[in-house]
Length: 125
Image (cartoon, rainbow, N blue to C red; front, side, top):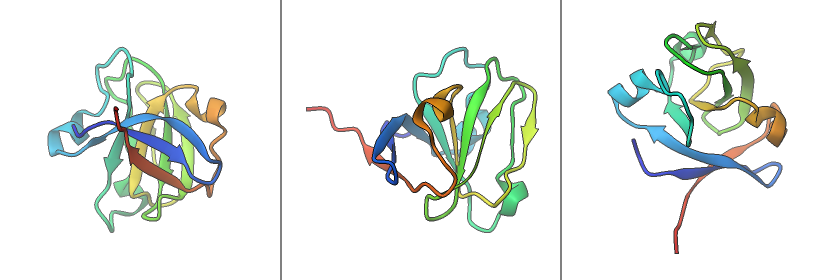
């Protein structure tokens, strides 16, 4: 996994929270499976041209529910959902970024369809 970054809702000028990019086949495959606690959200970057089905996710072997944000190549939110373990979900529109977060983050941060997101490296002084 890569270094931690802050996920920021650029539209609302709010920090959503820390995330890490799953930047290898194994880290994308594993995702948050078998974890019992989320310290950082996980960003899966989907290869271009995969369509809606290519950005679908599953919750197999998950031990906790998640909030998931789907964003397009411009990092605009195209769908979002709260999912329980053992469910599958296909977004309403193709996504380039699938962001898995602790359940409750969507309600707490009021992310909306069309919001533009950005990732900023966390700088420790």
